Length: 407
Ligand code: CA
Image (cartoon, rainbow, N blue to C red; front, side, top):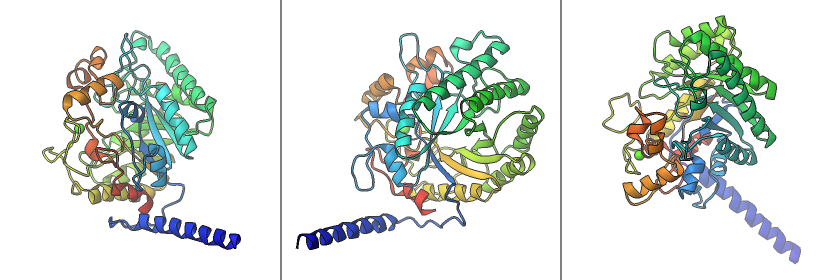
């Protein structure tokens, strides 16, 4: 009798778990599957600001409305790779963080440990700067400001080596490392492309020494600019730069068509036998701002909007980028940028501002003034991408995140 009850109980359990799974796939999203998508294709997410958001009180809720570790929720939705940026020293003399998640090595270690727990690999994005690096700025860390080029080469090597060694000591599964972030115009305060090539090689050497299985990536942006990726990849080849992956940001608002993206990455992949990927992308699911700090894209922004700003538009964008990259020879993956950078969700700008300043959960704090006076130091504030995440303002996962499983 007891046995029978046990049997019925376990049958009920099985049935209820089956139901959960089919309920999950009963998505309202009409997403076409991607043909022949490899199970090893990277479906990645950048979550660099996570720890600062949690310190500010943010919580995340899964499809069952239960609070969970963000990385677990992402895992449940098919995300198999986590990306984090590392700034050398994003703090002022008094220890106040510059913001943007105060994304230093310690934050990367904490996120990396949690990724490991969820069987996700880590993509480490070294900006080799104390704060945001992109085509408009590539400032050296303040400590390296007066270094000669030779000193800087040694410093890049040592910083990458020490950081990766510390991550490996914690058994974190680092799979990809990027030497620099959107390095179109320079890297680490150097603007000659031959010098940049040397710096990449210093970082690559450190990577290879720590773990020869780590893939070394270079990261550019503006794929829409005619001939640009041909130019960079030709120079990297001429300068014998040691790398495995040629990666790009792809924000469809400014970065041209998917056909063009495929064309310019295919050139690198076929001419130099490199892996290619999208290391950053995102799309709006709404026009609404939720943290009293203006978003970088909304209905008033003059830019390309290939899909409507809706859950379906956001999911369709992700699906189509995955489709494009997976059909390029050596196309290995797509990373969504900061898909969980939601509001710290207080009732006023002033209340949010206090948390952004205290924990660095906004894109920049007022303390960044000493390092980046012209941009962050003037326009500091909250999340500029809360309308491009996969979570509502109170942390509930959105339907659109299902796209990573649905493809
Ligand atoms: Ca905002």
